[in-house]
Length: 613
Image 1 (cartoon, helix red, strand yellow):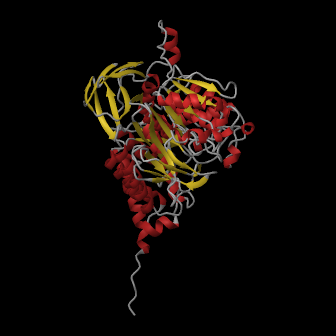
Image 2 (cartoon, helix red, strand yellow; image 1 turned 90 degrees about the horizontal axis):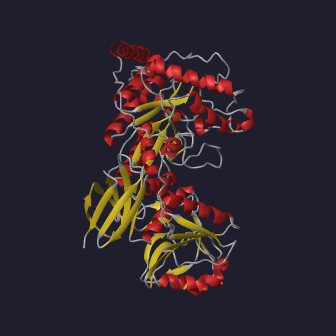
Image 3 (cartoon, one colour; image 1 turned 180 degrees about the vertical axis):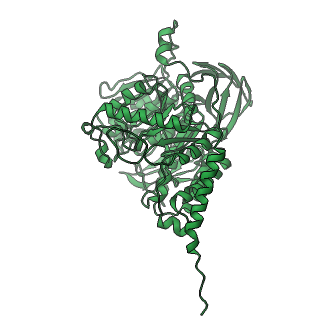
């Protein structure tokens, strides 16, 4: 019997040879990057502008009334989601709490949004409300109303041909129209949405946008005309938290002939814990697939694959340094891993390719003390004093500057997205170059993360949350991202190199499977966002400043829209939702995102859009 030859004995000398070759390459050639002196592109802090301003801000008349009910928990969440969506879109609105007073005057409003379930709260106004819609009013039910006597009075104008008793439960949604960019025809939420809906059959003149994704096909969202007015109905109690703001904004836009609102137009790609010390030794799963130890896998497999994705989608990497994984919480805070070549090699390539290297941590211990009660939740140790945390932060800046000379470090990502209140206050004070904090957009019931909005904080720091994460983003993350495409035209994704080494974080998948999953996600993302700008985190923060200060004022008549941009600085980006076809634009450019949705680049504060007659 012929024996198979074994070449495993070659592994050790080959590995040594590869590492020596790599080390020699770094030593002899280095990674060349330039330290460019760019003109200042951060805008002056709002506090400075307010002190210098001699003019009053422009006020706009509110034509939208939001009805709320302060006694219901779900109603409160629905209200928060609606008002946050309107605020992001710079839609002026008034709010009326029906618990305080059942009576309200609709005569000065064009749009009404109901954010509560119990229609009995407005039983005396039901007839007046339906007459107001018939005469040209626009009504949005942002949450499914209760199946009550009040609903029995008005269900026909809502586009309902038959209303059964009680409620029906269904799962997920199927998007029948391009309500959200990239969503048409897709299924979302079979494992995270369970609707309580009215059991209805719709009339033929309704336009159905969403149905449940299960076999029942329950109508979940539709629009219908009533007289000279219009109604959009959400037949679900599920769209009441932050992840659904884009859907609420889209529902509002269905009521209007034209909606124009500012957006960020930025896609950022973050790699946390990078550069960072690479674990020594062999991972059995990786070795069985690639016959490499961990370091050589990262150098010769993972990094080239990540670079290929960068080239394919024109990604701009923002990476965030961890100096050591040792939980050193007392001085001396020093570097003790002896992998300088790794930091300089990876960091140099990121900077050479136009990316950014930011701060993550001296170690991977969030800046929280025992009294905060947060580190313990993720089994981290706690710091004993503010002084120790500050010393560790200063050591990280010293080390990062020594590895990558001349580079400003303007962005900070909290380890595990944990950042306690006291540290949030002193961090910008001891790191004067710091301008951006990038944590997360969505809260997590299990983790007390530092949750952000896209905004400028009062201390001048720009809050720039990341939206999705992982090599294999799940259906929920895709849903969240689809909402954010509509609302902010922004994408922010982050990965950790060492997720591959953890079977729970990688869901037991091989690197080849993870790489393919990330590729598929990025393909969907970029197919859904024509005209999106790939930016570093710092550049994205600059875009947030311009977005946050921009307010469009527009008047659309006779197939033309005249737009004035209050707060315009040097560029502006907007989305326009309209069923009319735009054919010309003055002082800007148009990109079709999806049916009825257009991305506008504004070159000046005054634009004119012409529509097909």
